Image 1 (cartoon, rainbow, N blue to C red):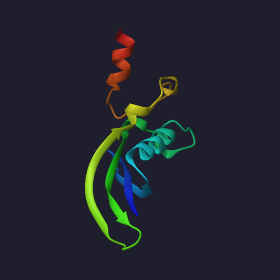
Image 2 (image 1 turned 135 degrees about the horizontal axis):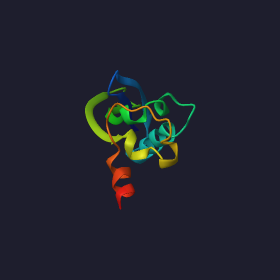
Image 3 (image 1 turned 180 degrees about the vertical axis):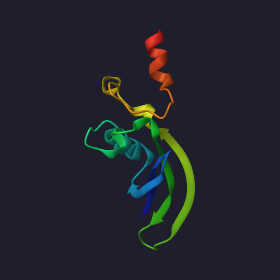
Image 4 (image 1 turned 120 degrees about the vertical axis):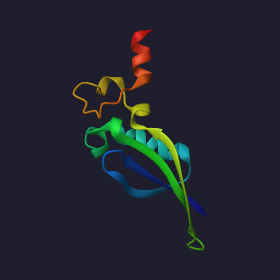
Amino acid sequence: MTINLYSVKDVKVGFMNTWGEINDTAAKRDFGDAINNSQSVLNKHPLDMQLFKVGTWNDQTGELTSKVEYLASGADFYKEENKNGIHTSGEQNTTNLQQTNN
């Protein structure tokens, strides 16, 4: 079976540990849950976090392939009710700004 490999990149620090998931949707769900979990390190600076698919691993042959592909930003998942006290890198969540201005 081929397992997709994912990693979160902190734009100020670099890539974090890699983990396997069945598909991009499951990885995005994991990422979004971590972004909104106050006990998660990703929640401390959510706008600095980005999700990447970094390759695949075949659990039968042990073969690894590498292909880095951007999937999402922490801003895509950070819930509006969590915005109080947020630590940002100077970037803005344009999706939420557009909603506020409408």
